[in-house]
Structures are given as C-alpha cells and as structure tokens.
Image (cartoon, rainbow, N blue to C red):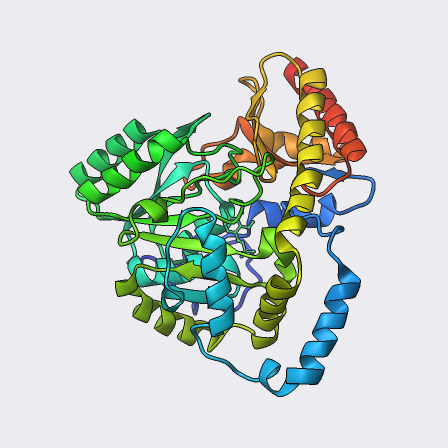
Length: 416
Ligand code: PMP
C-alpha cells in the first residue's frame, strides 16, 4: 500500500527531507500544531500571550518541594531512581482513587494506570481502539493534543456542536446516526465535560446521564478527559460520566493543572476489562512512568494541604477570568461573542463574519498580542471565525492590555 504515504513534492518543488519515502503512512496526518508554532513569537516579552495554556505555577511551595525531593532521594533513592511497574506505584494509585471520589467515582486502585501526563493516556486509548478510518466523535471545537493523537492513528473525527451547556445530546444522536448510515465504525466519544479546552463551557448535569445513555444504546465507549475538574471557581465539582457508567467510560486524569505539569504525571481509570491491555500498551510505550516523579506526587499529596493549594490556584485563575471577561465587555466591538467559563483556563470567542482569525494572527502579533486561532481545534478546517483566549498565565493587567490590543486589531480588520 503506497497511496497513503506522505506526498512527494511536485517536480520542481524543493523538499529538504531526504527521508520522505521512508515515513510510515500514519505520519501523513501528523502536522505541527498551530499553537506550538506560535510559542516562539508569543513568548517574546513585549507580546501579551493569550495563546498557550500554561498553568500558572507561581503559587507552588518551591522550598518545601525542594526539601521533599532531597529527602526522597536521601531516604529512598535506590527505589526512587529505579524502574518501577508499568501500572504505577500502588500508594499513588490509591491516592488517585481518593481524588476521583471528589467527583463521585468509586474506583479500585488496580484499575488505575499511571501515565506520563494524560496526553499519554489519550495516545494509549487511541492506540488500543482505533484502526485507520475508524471514527471518533468529539466536541467541536476539541482539545488540540487529542486531535493530534487521533490523526497519528489515522482515525477520522466527527465533531458535535456544543452550546453554553456543553455537548448537545441531539447533535450526538444525529452524528451517530449519520456516521452509521455512511457505514462508518464509531469507536468512541471523546469528551471534556468540565471547563472545556478550548470551549470554556461545562456539560450541564442534566445532560450527563443522557449522553451516557446515548453511548450505551449505540454501543460506543466514552473517553472522558478531565484535567480541569477541580478548578471550578466556586469550588464546585460535577459528577463524572465515569461515576454514572463505570463499565463504559475510560476516564483520563492529570496532576498537570492541580499540581505541576512538568512532572508529567497523569492517569487512566479504565473499565476493569480494559485494564490489562492498557498496562501492556503503557509498558510498550515507556516501560514505566517515572518513579521519582510518582513518589514526589505521592509524598506531596500525603504531606501537603493539596486541596488548599488547589484553592489558591483557583483563586488566581478566577481573578484572571474576571479580568478577561470585564476587559472583553469593555473593549470588544459589536458582533463578537464569547463563552463565560466557571472554571479552567479558556474563553472561546466568535468574531464577526468576514474576519479570518488565522489570517489576522500575524497582524495581532505585530500589535503585540497573541491568541490561538480556531482552526487548530477542529479536524475539518472549521473555526476560522473563532479563537481561543487563555487567561491562565499573564497577570490581570497584562490580560487587560492584551484584550485592548486585540480589540483594536479586530476593529481595523472589520474596516478592511
Ligand atoms: N486534555 C486536555 C483537555 C488538556 O487541556 C490537556 C493539557 N492542555 C491535556 C489533556 C494533557 O495534559 P497532560 O498531558 O499535561 O496531563
């Protein structure tokens, strides 16, 4: 089979990659994320970056952590620096179960597999379930890293719209009926129910059982991705889909947003029947997640007021959310609309007809503000009138200044 191989450049067009003929067919769908490409320009100090979703870690107790890491190595170094099991260390898996209980999940530590961030969970789940040409249903827009994994396994994504209350059940029914009619095999629904990235909305509690039921009726698995669930600005949590249907939901969790993203510790809670295959997939990918990092997380959870720390994170993010929403109200021209998140990192904005957010981006960067244009969050090229604003990282003043600059760019764009 050669037809799926990466396309050779047309005669006369130069391609510097001498390995072009060698790549596997699956690399054809691998493209650089628009957001990653932006990082270099957006990180220049004069640019207010509302583009990336980097957690704001300034509130972490670095002195305590550094003392703890030192102790860990001094007391337990030969374990901490050694290989471990692909499944993850047992004490951490137990603590993860206690965390998930906050969202109504009853889980056994044996069914938790520790991963290198939830991104690895996404990759493993796609690897386990998707053959080329299989369909994954996902919200439109959806998380760019998930779309990257789906593309790497040559799965096709069918998007279902969200409204202010999250994924629309009627839309899900219609998408399932259409894909079935087209003779396509749907493997799973990928959903981010809480404080959506990039949508900024949360799935209404009343819709949760209905969505679980639709997936049951249609015999498709749910992959529930929930890195932001404990970052509700009022301290509120929502019942996980996994708590409603434990046998049909693969749940992905992460310490990236509630503790430290650089440690790269996340987890998958699988239905019991899937767990064994998941451990094998994890083993073939990484042998085991980093032992030291798992021990750091485990010790942090057992010795630190981690709930208090999450509250501090939430307060920082809420202050920034307030800053962005009031600046948007104050500065944005008529015809723009945006979501109003109750937690998490993101506002999703729609701009007036005729404005193309991807084409506008270089002009915005020249005006010293960066955002993520909407097309990166769709698998099908949609999203040119949308953009994502991340308020998690800059200070409230910088956020206000960034929004002011963006509004000015939009206004001149509308005059064109
Ligand atoms: N899922 C979603 C929805 C995310 O926003 C992110 C990070 N931005 C991830 C998964 C991956 O997180 P990590 O690998 O750091 O756990």
